[in-house]
Image 1 (tube, rainbow, N blue to C red):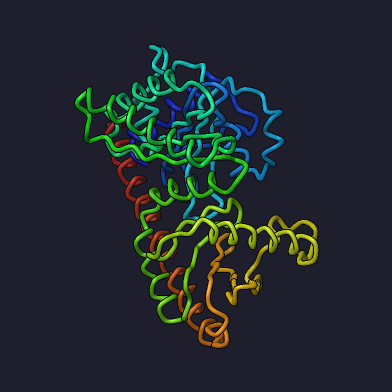
Image 2: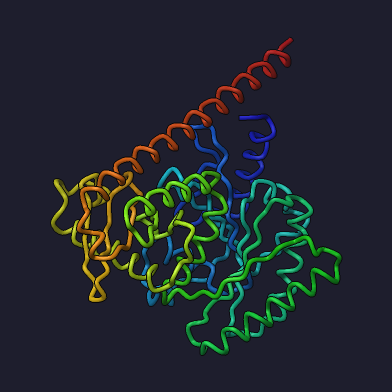
Length: 371
């Protein structure tokens, strides 16, 4: 690890000690096994906008109804999300009432290692103040780190009609971009999503955010395109089975209903496996290399799930006629899984090389300081 990264880690640790630990504990800023500094996703917004509920539903499988009893966050909470080697980042949940631009906060340290900033706006509330805070946050963050992906979740849209949702999105999109244009910051790009914890929209939105933090995404998409073109498959997703975030899909458009069916299929597989599939009760995850599932829909479409790695699964949709060539599909899937393993191997080697380089730099600096 470089000296700058070590200094940043110390500063962040001091910050977390100042603010106090969240209930899940404060985790290390860097991966001790690989020496890799993980990108951060910041969850920001006004109080009661739904930030903590989003985190609990997506990454802790909490029922949306249970989030009604969550207490308001009053300190910065950090959580490591490393359910697979592709989904590897930290979630920082910021309390809405804390002014992190206060002189006691070093916001440059916060934004420097950030991969994405998610600003949550309550669509059922007056969002004038939220838009003002969004503008201030984005402009400050951009001056420190122009590479941050700025994501706006227009949240709690489950209580709005489709027409009202579109109207809200159009209004928030226009106001936010007008504020940036007036400040001469047209180059800042904001991405907008309509979200709710009561349907799959929050999972799809987080999927889009996570994909921007995966450097291997073009390779994964290309592998999926090759697989479906040679297997008679219409659509394929690569899912993280823990969070139901899809980290990649082929180049064809994503249909929301197809995505929802995929999530439901993963839930069915995990629920049945947890009852019948565990060899011993101490196993952490009821999912292994033998996990597979086939569902025949009433429109002559077949859903096919296969395990790719310990935490990744492919879910694909194909016509019933194409599924008659299951042997060919399984052979192509075997080639796909082998290619994914090679992608993993390359990533591990890159991380190991970075770690060795960081150790050498640190050794040279230590030796120079002792002279």
